[in-house]
Image (cartoon, rainbow, N blue to C red; front, side):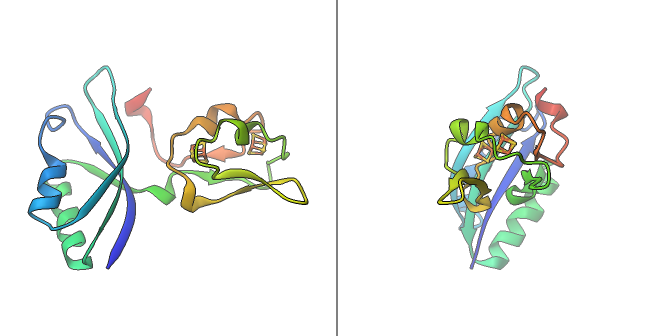
Length: 141
Ligand code: SF4
Ligand code: SF4
């Protein structure tokens, strides 16, 4: 079994195709959508958790790439630069999942990658630029 959070990025000509339906029907995967965006240029991004048999998952990923989608593993997207973090707590207020949180009793901020849904709110909120994404988000600017 595999259980993986991924981001799919769609060029405009694919946005309206029933990709999720195909992933469920043709590849026997379970798909849990975490977030969806379509920018003004009709380019789309879907964040999801996908689970199923490893062979089915690999076949589905190969098929998605053939369709022209860009696939990124979600945990690769947000990086907490602990060396830059001042533990000011600004991110803990806006983080919707508690991925960024105060640890007690030290009251130091910690980052729980498993809870992160890559909403990117912390990227803008962090005054120390301690939250980073290595992914090129140019499509969505
Ligand atoms: S906002 Fe930035 S500096 Fe402040 S606690 Fe969060 S990650 Fe650390
Ligand atoms: S990307 Fe969103 S969910 Fe993830 S740590 Fe930042 S604010 Fe929290």
